[in-house]
Image (cartoon, rainbow, N blue to C red; front, side, top):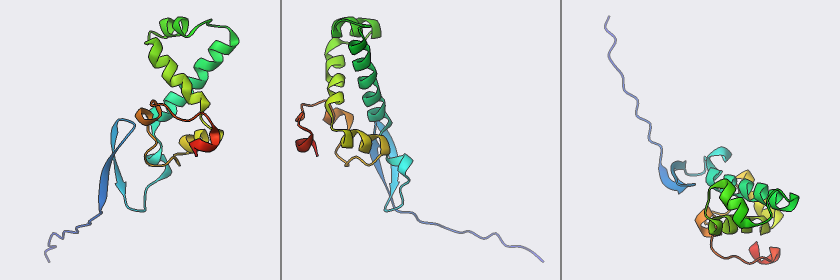
Length: 120
């Protein structure tokens, strides 16, 4: 008795999207929460709050001092620090991977309203 080779083909429709500078495969309606988290954006938000804490604690007197210590351009530090002005609900959504599709780090590096109500 001979066993014939059998082939099973599974077709899964998916999209490739950029998330946090990386390409991610997304299946329609079946995307895990972890797959939706923008790691680059999460790291930037965490870095912003860490830097703000360093400035508030007096570890660094100015953004220029902080930038020199971190070996980063002061203008970049200033733009990232603005992320601490995001509404708490927006920060939570970013950390949970629930941010709207257009909310990316490059988008948040552009000027945004500081009023929490207008950010939503």
